[in-house]
Picture 1 (tube, rainbow, N blue to C red):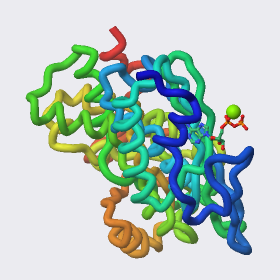
Picture 2: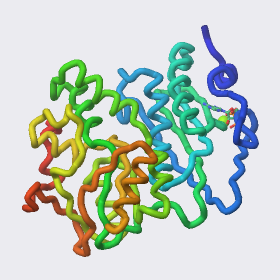
Picture 3: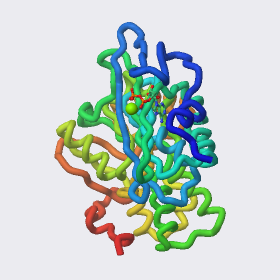
Picture 4: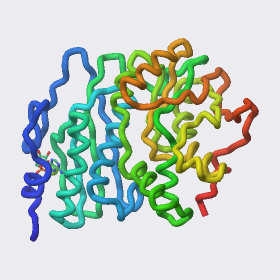
Length: 319
Ligand code: ADP
Ligand code: MG
């Protein structure tokens, strides 16, 4: 059964508006910001083969396309309002669209973020979401605010998504149960929106971990004009990752990517407030290091001894 472009939009992507002044169906959508708020916006393009595997379930792809954008809002401490969805589809497959939209709307509803527009075209499978949120003027969390003496924190655990990718590529075999657990980390990341909101006025800087801890922390350090030391044994990891050889653990923790956890800094005298924020958001956070004046990123072991490492040295997976 061939589905036309407008029938497809109407059937799978049009719902009554809630918070927006105008949603799908006109030339523009209209979103009303509350007084004193700034618009926070971000966009991510996901291409089959590059950002997701063809084996991914459609509902999980719908989830992830929105999740990575919600994660950007979280990293800025912004509250989600709405999003647009641009889709390139090789065919208009009703069963696929049904499942994709179900995964997308389940996450959207969980965050009160509504679909207000988009674009639909035939082409190799690609999904783009642009997201809009609001944050009180001047209160957005930025990459540039880390200061000497701040603690460095990360939410949740790191590395599972990379482990799953490696299992998909055949570089590693995991028992069925372990594989399912890391696969969820890769395919259905949970954006830390509530934590981002709770960190407003508390975190001095924040970023979401999408390209790997070391690389993303380097962005914060450069933008803030500082350096940091991280404690390797303090990096939070799942049971599945803990069961892997130490070199793999390090690779996945430091340069894994696709984690979508929040990496942030806060003054050392605000540790209790950080833990309270984590509790209020129901997300564990780990204190993993400290900001220092000397530029660059250093690693130490459990006894405080320097650990030699280089990003390029972690190439066990690149064979
Ligand atoms: P235009 O030609 O003015 O860009 P379109 O004909 O492409 O509008 O789209 C018609 C309406 O459907 C617009 O409101 C657009 O935002 C919306 N739309 C198109 N594709 C999608 C989609 N994948 N998800 C949600 N809304 C969509
Ligand atoms: Mg159009």
